[in-house]
Image (tube, rainbow, N blue to C red; front, side, top):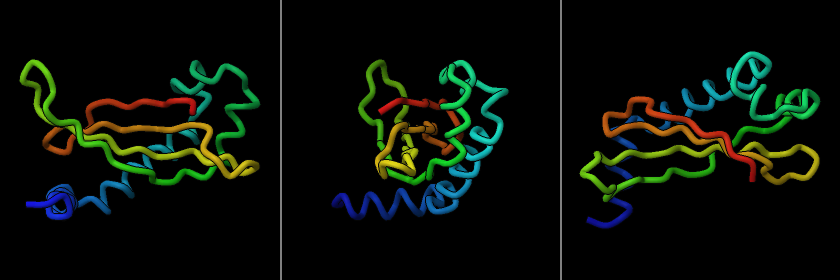
Length: 112
């Protein structure tokens, strides 16, 4: 089995295109409600928070988290870039982690 085979099996097993769509919709809801969720604490400046609605949210990559210590099950993270409309470069990354069953596990909002 090569990496392409692993990718194809992964995409089929997790209905990946649908998962990407649902994940992006989830992130867009977070941005729409930015004044009432963790983004209000993460980005303290109101104007910067407000600018998030203008950013382009774009799928970037998937991380497979395997061979974890302590015998934990594998997981994966789907990463989305927040592309700044002025610079064309990502200012933030939003990652959603899913467990081995494809269920939501955690989320991370990171400044690039």
